[in-house]
Amino acid sequence: MPKNKNNKTIWSARINDNTSSLFQKIGNSINIDKRLYNEDIEGSIAHVEMLFKQKIISFKIKNKIIFGLNKIKKEISGKKFEFHEKYEDIHINIEKRLFQIIGEEAGYIHTGRSRNDQVITDFKIWIKGATKEINFLLDKIINSTLKLAEKNIETIMPGFTHLKNAQAVSFAHYLMAYVEMFNRDRKRFTNNLENLNENPLGVAALTGTSFNIDRTYTSKKLGFTKPTNNSIDTVSDRDFVLDFLYSVSVCSMHISRIAEELIIWNSEAFNLINLSDKIVTGSSIMPQKKNPDLLEYLRGKTGINYGNLFSMLTILKGLPLSYFKDLQDDKEIIFKSNDILINCLKIFDEILKNFTPNKKRMLELADSGYITATDFADYLVKNHTMSFRKAYHKTAALVNLAEKKRKNLNQLTMDELKKIEPKLSINALKVFDLKNSVNSKKSYGGTSFDNIKKMIMKYKKRK
Ligand code: ARG
Image (cartoon, rainbow, N blue to C red; front, side):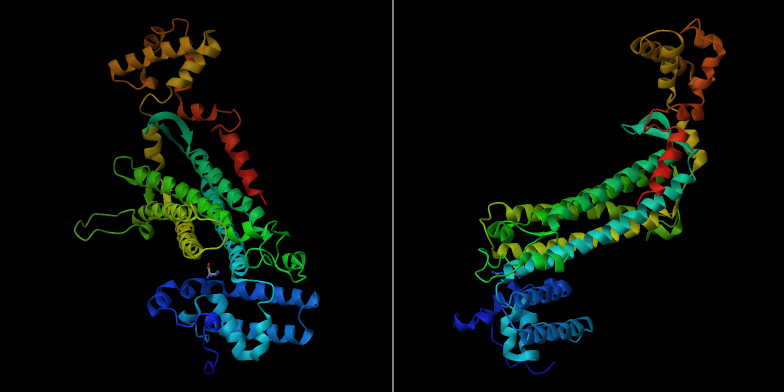
């Protein structure tokens, strides 16, 4: 890069003294927002094309500026660009370099715009890209979960409430619950696009501009659907940042809940799943250990993402309209949350491919805790004309009897069962069969094998 002849700050014409070197060092954001260089250049090109179309700048100046911007883009992507902290941020770093490349005509680029609208334009474009990447990874996770579910439709395990055996379920049904969660995440991120698709460019510092600009034109050029409505709101608004951080937090929370579940299932006490050696780590002292560190990583990072959401909410609380330096931190917060989530999504996909259900143990555990008691109560309602509440009481008596005899429900004799309901037929024994129990839940959204198969198909066909 040639020696910088134009190395004064933009505001040196007004502000006589140099900014304190301490503030210059800590108040700049270049090492964070340089990540927006592509979006910044894209926004600037659309802006100058619009300025030319509106006859605000000449054809020659427009072309010179675009030539310079493309050169800068190459320099930055080729790691040949020298970023300067004294130029604060990506916007001024690029503008300063443009002066070096094309000379004084670079001064036309900032006609009818401000860094205030420039930065949000860049940021919105960036978040739209990030949303796309997250949705792509969520899609991958959904596909991996569907694959695992397909293999486990008839794998029976206990379903829990309060971590106590509740009713038997298919392992695939459990996995399909995760699919619902990740699909909602995808929708949540997609819903954010409505606000992200409003173009901030052209609201300038806070009032709009007296130049005859065309914001609809730049909207189209930059892939926005329409210009924002109010210039003051536009430079003040960081709702789209909160939406993204909230969506990241909810998605992280989903991953964390599942991670916690897998940690519990992987414990010796439960022993419901086996993690492959790829996703465990050892202990420095206990030679036998295989610890689920990766799952714990996922759970831990969720806390950081919640913190980021709260940082941003707190920055905005009590901030008057419109732009204030406080807002500069929005980018660091989002980049961090985004990077954490991307890592977590990638790790979680690895985990899905690296654990197997311990089917024998799942069935064994499902066969304890009187898990078919509700099935028996339902049977009484259907076959012995009584209300559910009455059947519930009779079944509770049956469970008490089984407990006293130290038997499972399916080990009770016909005589013992008849103590509870004298008219009971041998048919009643079927309700204690776990597979029957799972498959009988045919109500929409229930755990019957057919329901699960249909749901897997539905998700496989999704667009
Ligand atoms: N780097 C700044 C930020 O990210 C850009 C906007 C600066 N505007 C200003 N009036 N100082 O917030």
